[in-house]
Image (cartoon, rainbow, N blue to C red; front, side, top):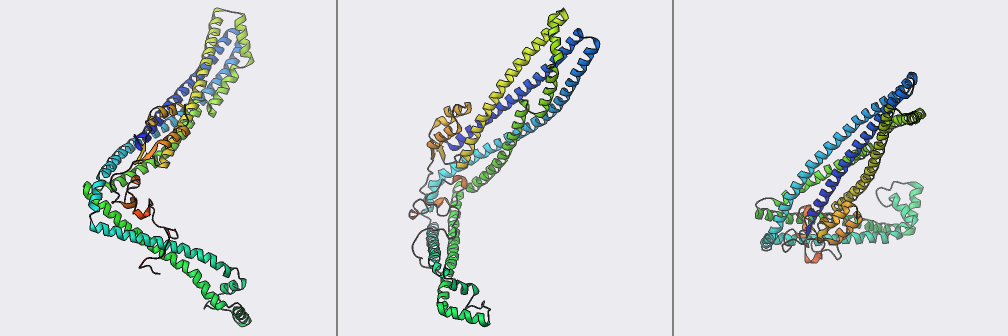
Length: 483
């Protein structure tokens, strides 16, 4: 049986390993790219040497000038490119170092939180045994249950009155004469018309029996507002009473542990959340820098392409081809050495080009696999699968299946499907007396605790608090309900 945090930690470690492999590959491609440029420059130098033997002084000088100019411009661009590459590399190294330090801190916090949560779980039986015989606690629990029931009933009544207002008020609102007088405030101190208009309005009011209708409509529209305010007041009381009950549970846990375990867990969780935000920011920075370095290592940046173009145009010129053919046609010891050097450089350039092409393909594959792993980690976190109560019955998630995901043999979706099927929530110890409905527990331990009461049938009535207008149940008001 794997814990959620063990599983998530192993996946994160695999992602870190893949990141390192990708970084090393990027460096290798960059070194090979620089080597390729150096070979092209040496090839250009060999052509200049050949020109000195096969051309008169003026022609050779012109060729050397053109080749030197191309080489100088290529070198200038490459020097600038190398400086930019160093800046990016330093930034990436700093980000990765910072990420490593944060990840170390996060692991230490995770271990400390795990220990505190395990200690808390071990104490739950003792806490339940103490509180189920504590008259003060039981009285407060009864008070909280009564407040909850009252809040449920008040919210239900508020919903019902709102529905009645919408249904019964339609007949009034569809009557144009009634709405005309209602909007003018007829029959209230707000009505300020005189003369003929006032006389006509009185006539219309008598005609449709407005006085009685106005009183009924005013009551119909006023009741939902009063009931909504009452429901909100009842909800606030229920939350306060539940908070008192939660404090009693937390205090009992503190007494048993000799330290504020709940507070410690909450502080550790807040620190972990803070680090996760920083890690997410760093991951985006690393992703951006890695993409830029991938562009550099692949020779896709503008400076490299310009440098390559300068050398390529010179090396592909017609007069150089003529030199090549002439050297072969009139062999001499010196010519043969230069031609052999050009042949060797050409072969080496083709070999390095093939290696770079293969590494670029591998780089794209690693990038795809890294994205799959990152997606799995995001899903784990969004579902809370790294929480204390999460477990996985499939041990292959951290061995065979993870290895296949890292190698690209399966997709992130395949891995996630297996993880979801094997995911379970561990049941905490205790009899669900303390921390009813999870109230008072740290967020990271939301799976702890049980029903607030048997009547709630699995609901968590206090999680997130009450909301005005929400229907919590049905039935009339209990003793003490008033507006």
